[in-house]
Image (cartoon, rainbow, N blue to C red; front, side):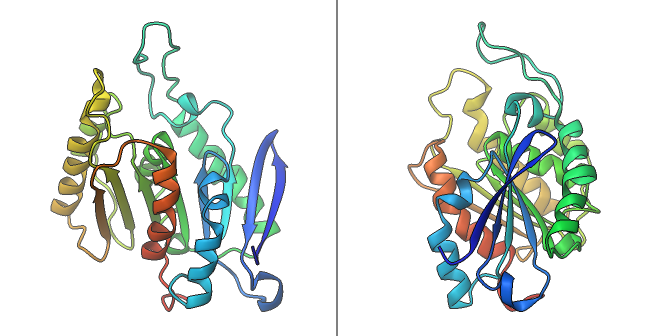
Length: 249
């Protein structure tokens, strides 16, 4: 690794900040990407990310990995029943969590590190529920985030597709990367079996609303299920599409 990882504590929460190789010598401001579920997405793919920095395919980025207190509460948009009788219900604190990210964490990061504060240079991303809350941020905070990485986002979440169908999304300047494995959820007895059909539908809705190919990308990987190793594998490609070198650098 040629960049640097710094582990911080903010409001009792572990925050992992990655600074790219040129950060300490350039004096420039960098795009920042807020990453759900801590740092695993960039920790596990940092060598590939830095190869893309060096080759000129991907802009150098600051990553901010946010460790959740309780992801089934913080990453869900509203309260919903659990998928299993003995499990706790989903807490539906997504709006509260995103208010923390935009209103408290991001200003602290912007003050401490050289970030670009423009929405088109501020991303949010995650896998599974982390992808769900990242898309929710596109509806709630389009003035803050302009780049969205949705890695197997949980579109099956109760009533979320109805929200996508009826809630307008601000398209201007926004870029969304969507990914799902072709067999995600197919053996599940619950709503999770709708993972792929709902992801396809969400892509179709966004396309109908004006998202063109340069603003919306959707990839399906054949034979792949819902596993974090595939989110990690896809992460550098998602970042490269969202933040290509030569644009804004």
